[in-house]
Length: 275
Ligand code: ARG
Image (cartoon, rainbow, N blue to C red; front, side, top):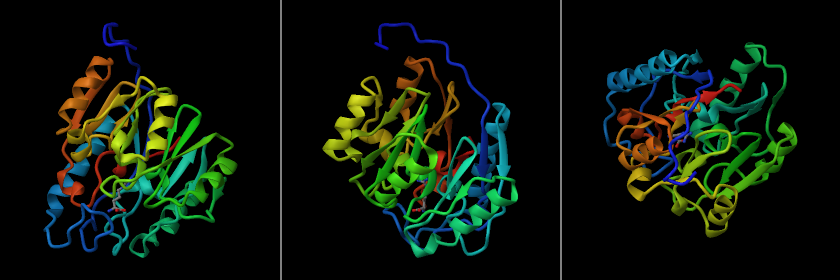
């Protein structure tokens, strides 16, 4: 769509999400540049911000399932990393860092207990929806920092959907969902500089009309956004992106998750979509 067109009417579709309360959330180690264990975390504020996000989803008509947080896993609040679920099939997560390793089986158990029959324990490291983003019937797959590129072929075989590998280059944007957000079955927004030149070219080829984020948008984690087709929940500080989204007929909703950002996560990281 060119900017001279009138924005189209966007339709939200009800979603199902899995979230994990930040009961044990803290920054006790550092596995990405955002994490500084010397900086204190306000647990009650983190909890309040998380509850606000959950309430917002529910007020928009979405269903939120909750997994019990486990002590000793301060990053478990980032449910997006727990698995990738498409057509009810679950590709479990296998974490890069030992600090998060136990989250893989913890999330996997939740799926088994909740009746998901088609569950795959992966051979290769993959950090769930953090690096697997679904656009319509195509899967965009990140690599470079966390997910092993060999996981992409494993995911393609398991889901039976085309998986497009993209390589991340900036350690601040270490998961695909920190550099790219899915807006609809055909639209995305992303921060080009987070990708290798080859991956930027792939994205231009596939999504010539994508919204491009500025460095300022990316720095406030504006791409760690969740769209239901109409409402786009994103960090409130992403001023430029909110404007671009409005021009395209989306309804941006700013959310404050500043405490969780101290661990390098925001809206999308806290949300695993159960497709
Ligand atoms: N501290 C966590 C880590 O570095 C944050 C994970 C954020 N999740 C995401 N989907 N980007 O692993």
